[in-house]
Image 1 (cartoon, protein in one colour):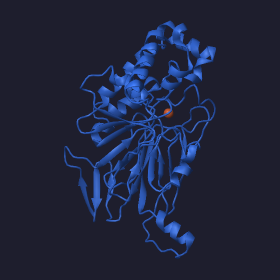
Image 2: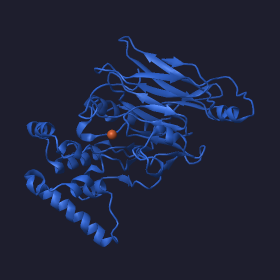
Image 3: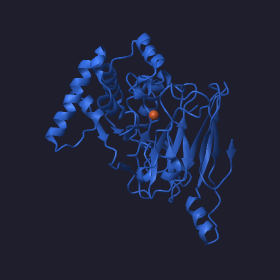
Image 4: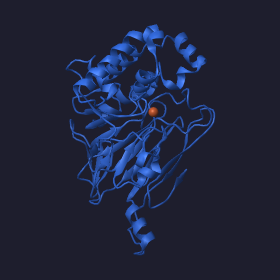
Length: 359
Ligand SMILES: [Fe+2]
């Protein structure tokens, strides 16, 4: 559903049986700001957006919607096109209009192969948009020994049947994914996220001495963490980074962000956009919630929920994983959605259908 409204918003509506998430969009407006100068007027004026939606429908009935959002200079970006004062300029070869892509949560071990191909395959979204930053949330799924599954005999037996039990293999696959998807034109950034931290739960809360396939790697990684702490005044490492870097050589170029470090893009555009938050942790120890992020002083691009959303300055991406995993039985509003942030700090959410992010 598309509603005309002066504010840009997006809500994902759950459906049953894999029918595809329903989306409610608003458009933004082309009318000038004209608000009463009182509290509600000030708020509405702040969120008044000069914008529109582009809707594409192909001959098979697949549809794509993305936001156009004009900045204070009247410039509008859309993928690799810029419009300014009535002139449309295609991005020159080798340059980019895209500051960052905040991908839907990556979950390498559970990634949807078609979406991976559409994003990083030859001629895919990343090579076409050439984002300066590729930002990953929940990079590792930690499917093989997640604490969510450890006490469920059927889920663990499924891992045995499918031969997906070795944690070291999963970490090596993540390294392979990083090497495959890194690009000369962009910096890969990995945000601290709850699935990345499942490694901590595994090292801390399980005794893998009775898990032969993982016993060596578990004790090896544990000793590596102790060694790091011993040499760093007790500080805890970013566990995924520690695990990845010991397997990697100098060809890997990636930046890991810890949970209390800010990572702001487009700093010169309206105060920038915080990308260092995964979305699971909200202010003051509360659970993360897009509405609480919308009340923060700075705009945010987050992940975690797997649910695409635009709530004022807070944007949430979807997921790169399959849309049905072990932990979202029942109605679901997950979607394959990425946040694209242009160089002027304006954003759009791209949702993939039929293996494509646009028609
Ligand atoms: Fe996730």
